[in-house]
Amino acid sequence: MLVLLGCGVVANVALAKTKGFGGGFLMVTFGWGFAVFAGVIVAYVSGAHINPAVTLGLVANGATEFGNAGLGVTVAVTPLSVLGYIVAQLAGAIIGAVIVWLAYKQHFDEEPDPAPKLGTFSTGPGIRNYAWNLVTEIIGTFVLVFVVIGFGRQGDPGGLAALGALPVALLVVGIGVSLGGPTGYAINPARDLGPRIAHAFLPIRGKGGSDWAYSWVPVVGPIIGGLIAGWAAIPLLPIEF
Image (cartoon, rainbow, N blue to C red; front, side):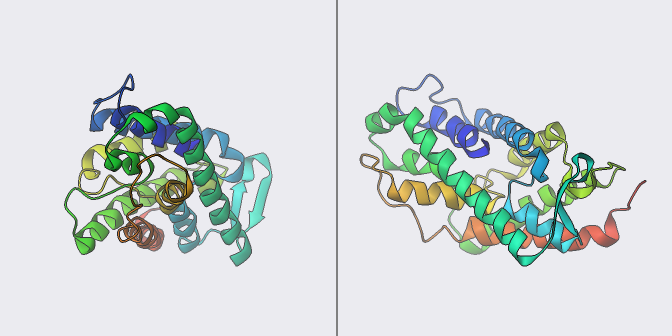
């Protein structure tokens, strides 16, 4: 749901002859915020961390279980459960991207430029400098995970995993408008890698390459940012009950 609506708004803005063509970065940013809202709502029972960087950040912060304690649905944090969450997040991202292609199939066919076709699926930097692009993704993801952990520490009986959908959606909009300009703010390894894989195997007319040379940045950067946020939240965010 996250990628279906998130990549969907990019397709609407970027591809030829859509009703939203040329809607601009602000439309994309709000679209991604709404996408996060929908994704968190449908994933609430699992803990709603639909992002490997959040999953790993929660582990770094000391979480001992995933799920929703308020609903009585939890699973112990183990290497296997962490891997299961990440695999599911990546699989969901691939499926969401495929559905976006189906929804916009005619517009992908009509678009002559391969750049917006790839841009529908995955992020790319405004200025390509891998080191600084990495820094941007680390910072953006740090903000995401640090604040998400803060949400979970405000006396919510569900604990760290019970994330409110609307606050997280507004946070993602805020990150987009404030920090999203340099790289398009992946802040989620699955959100970028899953659709990039879909771009590589889908039969998209005139799609060009999938820019694998850049693909490591929106994976490694968010992972680093999420881990730092998880560790930093231990001394910096008080627990309020």
